[in-house]
Length: 550
Image (cartoon, rainbow, N blue to C red; front, side):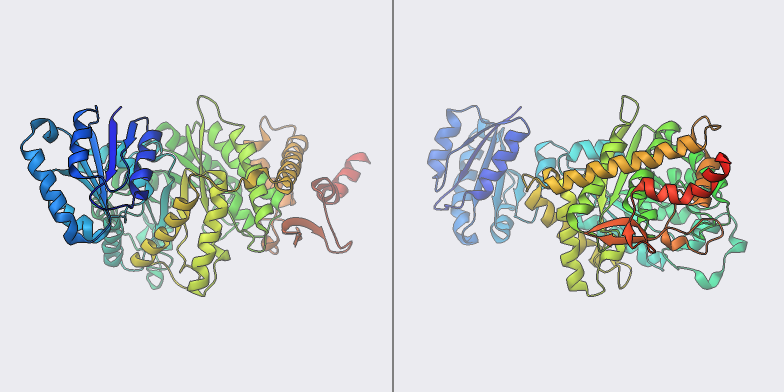
């Protein structure tokens, strides 16, 4: 514990920055004393002499020229007194004044107002993520804990040119606005990295950066070793998934692995694997990462919601993703909550859906399984008008802050028009940082709104009904919730379904949904009414039940 002494010096009466800094120091467990505004150097020095303060924080926000005599006076006093030399001196001011202060060696830290809240927290904790702390910064969980309560920021990045991507990674790292760069490889990389002869060269760079050899991945890591040393992670392969996972661990120090439960196969056309096979292999991929103590994110719930599945399926599949990860031995689980999916959902109902997911997922927590919340805006929710998209990104982030995330997956405001370039990644992160700064220490308690609570409880009941149905329909399975054959058959039978799967031979594709009162609900077009989960499943399973009765 340290003792901080703060004052605005000279004739400066602007004390907001000093007060906020001291408040943060108190929250970190330090003792503070504030002298006030317009404190002379003489009074400051006399107070230091009679206190136990060991960190002196001074602020000045007037003209640069007028601060020079004050700092010169302070420098003479420090040079003449060994006890003053031994103290830690911190300065805060406007950018022009801070540039003057940087010329005085006795200041250990100079704040110019461009820093964000997490920068200040890191300074107070003595963790500035310099090269000496590089190994610690490669650990996702340590970085989450080190920056708490400020969430980590993650952004997808991958351009069609490898060289452009490398230079972009470096620029993003040097901007110090992003904690995790999520590398987006092109489809050729994901599907045929180990079988380059199968690549269609016409599609090089389609959907991301072309990575053709291990050295390409290593170059990405090398270019990120600057600025705030962002962590790197990369989307999983869709073929040779275990070799690909090992490559990512070795070359990128993969911060965590994202793996779907029911996707990246014939269901979405991202690979030729049957659904049951891909589920089984996905489970083994989770197990591999769990054994290597690498966190896992199961991309599942939003895959269904992006295809207009009703909210109940989104909640149930969010739980099943976490359930399977835990069963495979994963210790640290990243639960992703994608808001604004479908885009027409109302904010209250969207929040309720996320709270229902949280309740079910975090019911799995114990000494062996810890859940971290990651939020993001729905990709399809952003306008192609980039100015409007910036507002939508800020709005979605404000709503998402209501669930107190550990990680914010920043979706670039340009994504509806084009893949984010480095400058757009940086700007998007700054927009999100502005929202975080405004909400971190207090916002309206939206999760306790009666309509939100009512919908959350309704969704929990409906999702549990669906989950119980899976158990009841497949009694021969020792654990239907993690049985690849059960889950695959449930998709084929339409128990788990989505409207966008209509015509897909590997799914039922019979589900109809509508947005009603801001909720995405199962819907009967003949009766023209929404269906409860019991009604939907009863209609779906009625022929087989009648056969069983006969």
